[in-house]
Length: 209
Image (spheres, rainbow, N blue to C red):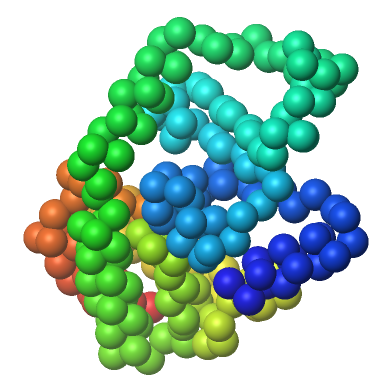
């Protein structure tokens, strides 16, 4: 969060454009994405398939003076094969309407807290060097004894241990993110029983490592 605020201060000071990549965080950590959650307003934002309800769709937006540079208002040409695809746009419109009318964020964060605490306990009990990083309903179990703040930190993770953990969880019927550097997400279809089942499998697998 401090990094985001510092980036906002520096770009404002030097007249640079601050762009947030919210492909992962948009509508996931909050309805307004990371910028709402952390209270930092960028000049531009990029979003991925979540704005299409999982359909192939992307979007970008920003300050009016920037967006007015794009055709037909301005001179910057932007187009794409699937731009304005009616099926994807309809799916996205329905998804965003449902998120606004029935926000799932408290439920998702509660499940994320439950899993993060469970994985932390399991790894600690197994004597595994680890840290759990979490933002809203996104989390990662890093096989690294230190907090991960940047690539240099992440690069020190035990990839071999993660690989054995991943395949061990697969053998227990739990499909976790397949990269040490990929975040784990939730949906409203996940239940506390599913989270507890995942924690129990992690306890078994981590002890076997």
